[in-house]
Amino acid sequence: MYSRSRRKGKMGRGKIVIRRIDNSTSRQVTFSKRRSGLLKKAKELSILCDAQVGLIIFSSSGKLYDFASTSMKSLIERYNKVKEEHYQLVNPTSEIKFWKKEAESLRRQLQYLQESYRKLLGEELSGLGIIDLQNLENQLEMSLKSIRMKKEQILKDEIEELNQKGNLMHQENMELYKKVYGSGGTNTANRVPHITPGISHGYDLPIPVNLQLSQPQIEKNDPPANGIKLGLRLH
Image (tube, rainbow, N blue to C red; front, top):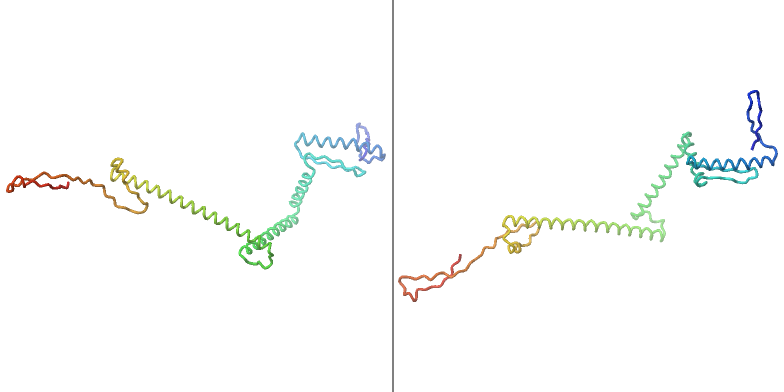
């Protein structure tokens, strides 16, 4: 810390000079007072202005005093990140290094994916041990199981859709049959045969056949007793 001495001129209050306090006792007292005031101001600033404030103080003896509105670790990490970004913006060489580093990281990821893909195809397996091969086999089995489940689900959906279409065609054929041949009452509707979608059928209306006894015919030339005949007449 530095002491302040005032030089008064003709206009009254003069320039304040900041210099180190020579007396160790006075220096320690001043440090204690100023430190408390600085910590108080930092806390007030964070509360009043909703600011993230971090304050670190080391005394001449090496003792640490600090204040952080949130977390000192998070504040330091944010400070380093912002400082690095700012340095990259003002320094093109550093920005080039950053993108080179990103490109190298993406290149390594691509190489790893290509190696994994070749192993899944059964290639380049010479350097793998029993555990690695077992893990690869388990991975393939899980993948195959997922593929089969997806395939079965698609087939079930298609069969369900075909069944719905078949039921709809059956209903339409039933309605068309009723329109062409008429309702015919309840009994006629119950006699409608099953219609298979996509197959055309011929339908014949039920024609009633009545059987009746014909009236006896009397011939003129035959005797009345022998001239009666019984017969069936089809209507």
